[in-house]
Length: 375
Image 1 (tube, rainbow, N blue to C red):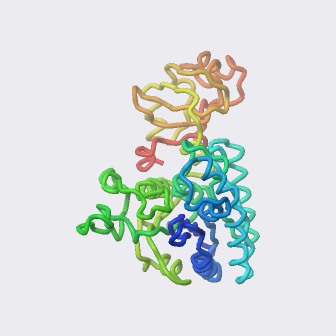
Image 2: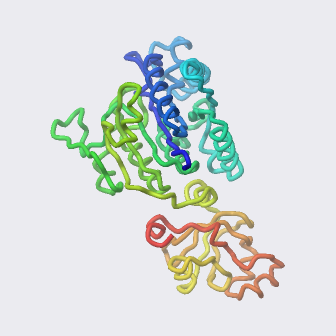
Image 3: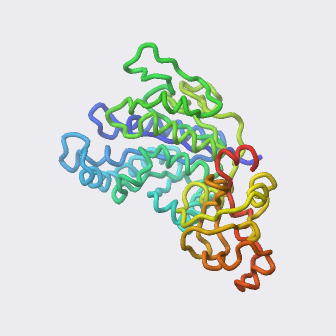
């Protein structure tokens, strides 16, 4: 039986002391809990915040910095200190760790995305614990993961994890902010993330040392669910906390049922990370073939093309004004203009192409709404 794969995400609020600095005591508790998972034959990937908290005091800051330059400088100092703290803590359990620092660019670039997957797969095969953090020293605000919340969801999907445990300073999701509203009601279990839940969880992080907030965790959970990964958001204490969480006895909110991953690595990249280079408008027959029959997109069904792009680019497939799918094209936009509306054989002759499909099914993903029903 294959080992179950667990991604554990620990936010800044679960790693810091009362002054906002890194708490070695908390790190040692988290380490003991992860060691228990490993002892019970689980594969584990750790997503850990805390670099800024680890580094700011050595820079002479009296408190965690608020400027971008200050945060990035603190992260530059703190990344080494954070991984050193984990190295020493895990050494007690004869566990070897590896550090990966990622940015959004690592996900949007197809080759880098594949390299992240290969590295993580090799580390897990060698029984190494990967510890992943956002590369805060070079990330810009518009491209951050939100205190690693979204990063944990994307990594969970990439490695086809069975479960994502997001540890925070509030014991789950509530319909209102429990720290300001005594009538707030906790969700113990959610089968899905609805728009109503998104609207209810607008309150920010319960800790002044966290940056993700509950909205960030909800959006991350929604992404993880779409990638086939169950999620827990909540707290825990003691070295058996993660085993308790996996046994459905955690103090928090469980999100999702027993899921299977919707997307292979290639389709995940297309669905969540690729940049859109143009649009292909199709007729009704092509739309139905793609959505309902699981077919590839052929030249015959194309009505017109918008944008200029090369083969290998990712485009949206449009029926009317609706996006029905995204996919990686075998033809450039110029070639498609020649081939549109033609049978595949003639299209190949006109463009001197070797592939009959404009977008092969293996490189095509339906919109999320459609994918739940048809893919």
